Length: 197
Ligand SMILES: CC(C)(COP(=O)(O)OP(=O)(O)OC[C@H]1O[C@@H](n2cnc3c(N)ncnc32)[C@H](O)[C@@H]1O)[C@@H](O)C(=O)NCCC(=O)NCCS
Ligand SMILES: Nc1ncnc2c1ncn2[C@@H]1O[C@H](COP(=O)(O)OP(=O)(O)OP(=O)(O)O)[C@@H](O)[C@H]1O
Image (cartoon, rainbow, N blue to C red):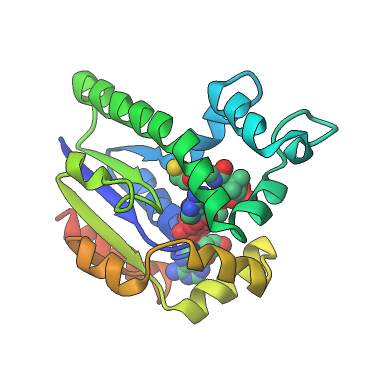
């Protein structure tokens, strides 16, 4: 069962590619952002440690959960605080992902395991992937898509892009490049070729 790591900058289309894979291939999908989100819910270790450092001001008063847009504005404008959050969350996320991969291999129900993470290379997830794919989309398309679908401002996109690897680093660090600058059908055709359907 091949383990394939998927990475790329904000809004390049990682989730879109994984949805295509989920619908068309027999694959187990793990998304680091979702694992992190779960581990940062109220009552979980990631929540307690995040609040201990960032304070009650990042708590949403109505739900008691972490106010994600608030935390995003802090970490994407302050690299030192981002490093602290990464040091709290990333080790637990990585541990959880390794255990999910191990379980999926034991269950042996899938042809592929896909692990998606924007920080796949930074956090050395490639050591447990058989292959790594960089999902590329040109920056103008990414900005346009993020503004339209999520209402992100240029300032917010700038902050996130600055905190992630650049195009060349992603390209050099990955085995394969999937170009998602075009339409979904073009991207799907590349997936079929790569997975030799
Ligand atoms: C900052 C948070 C609250 C923002 O949540 P929100 O729902 O608004 O955005 P989302 O999670 O979709 O992230 C937006 C983009 O930023 C990227 N991103 C998230 N955290 C980081 C980070 N620490 N460094 C660089 N990029 C990041 C995501 O991959 C995505 O491309 C959230 O991303 C978070 O808790 N981040 C810390 C945990 C983390 O590092 N997750 C990434 C994989 S482990
Ligand atoms: N080929 C495409 N054509 C048109 N729109 C696209 C294409 N690929 C992705 N999109 C749109 O771009 C936006 C960002 O895509 P997506 O959420 O898949 O990116 P992501 O890399 O997973 O983002 P994040 O880094 O935040 O996790 C979404 O609204 C998605 O529908």
